Structures are given as C-alpha cells and as structure tokens.
Image (tube, rainbow, N blue to C red; front, side, top):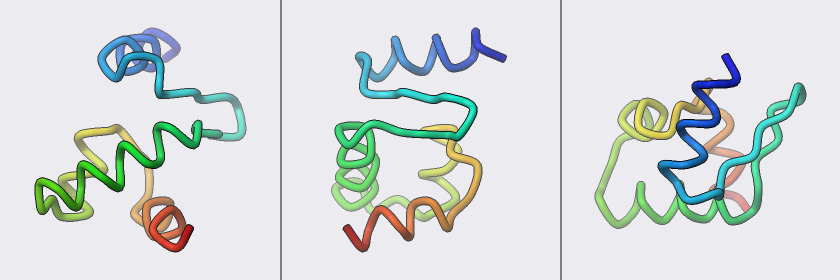
Length: 64
C-alpha cells in the first residue's frame, strides 16, 4: 500500500503526504482544487485522478 502512495507522491512532485490519519499537505489540497477547477473535472474524475477516498474530502477543501 505504501508503494501506491510513494508513486503518487513522485508523480505529484512531493505535494502528497499521507499518514494513518489521511493527512494531506496544503500544497496538495491547493493543487487538487486548482486542477479540478482549471480542467472542469467532476468530483469523481478528481477523486480518481488524485486517489482521494471520498468526495466529502474535496468539499471540505473547497470551503477553505
């Protein structure tokens, strides 16, 4: 499982940080929301692209 996150982290140039509590860096959150808006991605497309487990996570990030 850690290999998956290592690969994602490399792909997104170190913006991704995940621990047992599913913590993400601020830089990663901004990248996800920015990409979603700039590319007009749906929540489902964004979840799949960045391997985020729940759409409610992105909804929380949008409010920040």
